[in-house]
Image 1 (cartoon, rainbow, N blue to C red):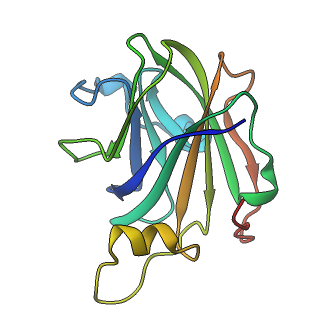
Image 2 (cartoon, rainbow, N blue to C red):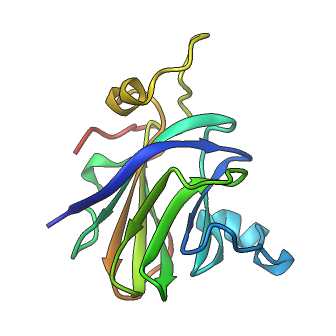
Length: 171
């Protein structure tokens, strides 16, 4: 059964956001994006992952949860899976340029399959006024994500499911 760990507004700078154990970790050059990791939809190392988005320089509503099984694809436009590890049990979600995480949670230390489920990919919030957190959380018509952590290393990584232009529906 899915357990909500947190949710928040995350600014996607340079078409990405971060899932990490330590927000202060410095990224080594060899851990950055390459042609191969772009195809996978993620880059970095298991303790510090950069997740690719479709909308750039835009706020996304991201939910973080823990589950004992992989998500069903019917509600999602795209599902990416990557390995995530936390020796301390800390997990954070943040924008690449953020000083502080938007979401922080504590889980059991160990290896996880991180399923990054997205819908309405490439759809930015329009208008001159920035929506409040409550308004952004309630909107299901803009790019948004749910990260589902499942204990254990993933059996497969990369883009597992991609419906293209079919935006999916709220689970």
